[in-house]
Every structure is written in C-alpha cells, then in structure tokens.
Image 1 (cartoon, rainbow, N blue to C red):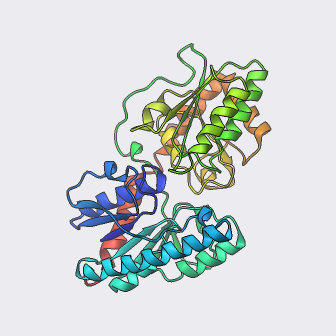
Image 2 (cartoon, rainbow, N blue to C red):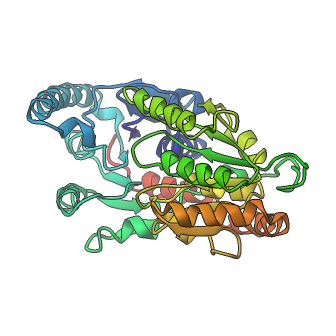
Length: 373
C-alpha cells in the first residue's frame, strides 16, 4: 500500500498519514509512505511494516506558480518527476495494491494509481482559495475511487463530489492523559500558547497584533509561539521576530520552534489560540488543546466551528479580526473562572474526536478496495 504525502513533516496532514500507515500495518498489511523529502515524518513511524521512501513525487504548491519564470521551472520539474515516478511504479507494480493521497498537493495520486492499475483514495485537508483552484482540483479529485474530507467545511467546497467526512481528531483522547493543573491556577502571569506551522495564513502575526493591544491596555500575559516554517519560508519567522521587537513584546513572547511533543506546550498554557487568517480546514491543534483541558480561541468559518461550541467549550472569532481576537483573549485572561469552566467542558468535548476512530475507518476502506498488488 502506497501513501503519498507531499509535506513529509510532523504537522497535521502528515501526522494523519503516519497514523493511517500504522493502522494499516496493525491490520496486517505493509505500507510505504512516499515523500519528496523527509522533514520528520519518519520519526512518527514505529511499525516495522511501515517504511518511508524518498520518491520523485510531483507536488503542487501555490508559490511555485507565481511568476512566468518560476511557473516554467515548476512545470519542467514536475514533468521530469512524473517520468521518474512512473518508472518507479512500473518497477514495483506487483507490490502496489492501493494508493492513498493526502492533501490536494498530492497531484501525483492519479498518475501513481493508474500506472499501477489500482484504486486511488484521496484525503483532502485544505481550504481552497479561489474558484479557479476549486475547478482544477474538482477535475483531479473526480478521478479518485474514494474521497475523504477532514471536515464538513472542506467537503462543502466540492458539493458535487461524494466525500466522506473523517475528522482527523487526536490520539490524546484515545488513552489516559497525565493529570495537569487547570488553567489560570498557578498565580503566574497567564500564558497564551499558539502551536502551528509558521506560514502565510496561520495567523501568528494577527495574534501578535492582538497581544500588542492587550499589552497597551495593561493586561498581564506571556506567550509561547511553537512551530517552525517550511524550508524556504524562514523569512516568515524573521518577520515575526521583527514584529515582536517593534511592539515591545520581547520580554513577553518566546519562540520555541518545532518541538517533539506539543502536548507539553499546550498543557503549560492558560489559553491556546488558533488565529488562522483563512478558514482552518480542521484544526488538529484545536482538539489537542481541548483534550488537555485548555480553553481555545479559534477562528471561524472553518473546521474549528465543527469542534468548538462558542461560549460553551471554547471561543470562536472571525478570521483576521484583530479586535475580536483581542476582546476574546482579554475576557479569558481576566476571568480565570471562565477559563477553567471552558477548559473542563473542552476536555469532555474533545473525546468525540478520536484519531484512532478516524484512521480505523479509512484503513478499513483501503484494505477492502485493494487491487491485485
């Protein structure tokens, strides 16, 4: 079984790929994860029946098509990668039984599956940014034998395609968690934590604007930014450092970079923020933070609205709305009782979003639709 993962990292969609491969192996099959590079996904794999292969898999990234020269170079590279991956598939055709592609960037899915003559399953984990994007991906996705979406929001982007919603959930609700203190219970300055890839849309810059407003209003807090940039996007982290310095927040905000286990960071939080500037497809961090009993402020529309009941077990604010985010954070940071109440309700709510249940369902589909390999 081949699972295509275009990022090969340790973030949301790649974590789902690794968990799915492990479940396939648990059910008695062998799985091979194909990535263009290993940016940490290999560390997520434990089963000896799962391997990670660095393969010339064509990957579609939005930034690669900006400007005529870059677009021409991207087209040339993808064509060359396509020829190499076809040769690879033909060499091991008898070992490939089914292909699973994760995220819309895995445009090689149809090519790999058709070359091997096996079914293609495709899991969509993105927000589509334009009508043209939607039209292009609708054509590509229509060739899949089975489609999954990480949220109803994502599925709703393609209303004419039959998609099964499989909320990716979190493994943290699939076992007992170590006990942790309730938020706002240490007596120290409240800690705001943001966990996520540093990119153009995750909204760390929006959070920093809100924190600057809180600091100007005399609100006490510290903040941890957890996560790294994709290789080539390190300048985005540098911009955040500059923003922190310009706002006078150097003594309040720390950059933790990528960590092995973000659970510790979230457990240290009094409030967790997911400040995405475009609709979050699902928001795995949302469920992880809720699972450890933390109140979460996240943006809507998007997947978080399928998890959080605003005012009951978290708070939702409009995407990109700095005043709304500032107000939501101020309310929680200055009302410890409300923060603790939301945290307790969040832990109960998170139990409905099990990663194990999601990967079991998708793995069962994969194993029952295998081709001749």
